[in-house]
Length: 171
Image (tube, rainbow, N blue to C red; front, top):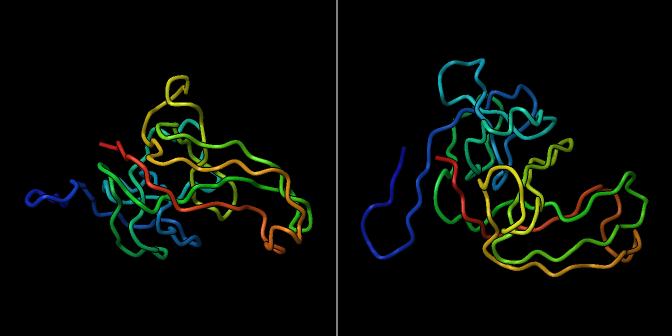
């Protein structure tokens, strides 16, 4: 565990992790979850396909891309400026993009378990969200109306997102 404990900059706490996925790279800014089958306390897996019952095993936000079986770090407490946020998804890469609601400072973020995304998504307004308050957004994000496939400039992908500032509470 690494603490920043002197100076006049914000405080963060980071822990050592090891990617136990055999195929997926943990993406920087994405959530990781303790893999209890390893029994070592550092083995983690990405959010891809994670069961709801295992979301309480949230370990933190990955600091840098971490390939399978490699060691890295995750932020477990403090402000993190590069959290991967999914704003919209679509069934096929040729479909139009759906609209999405704006996010306000303090909104609670939940885990997005879609394939090969390893990100978070809006769970609800800060005062009304249910579940854990592991992550809260520290900035606003504007809403968007439906965009055509070509108008969004994203032909060939099925999710669109942003890097946002969040407060992490995974200790």
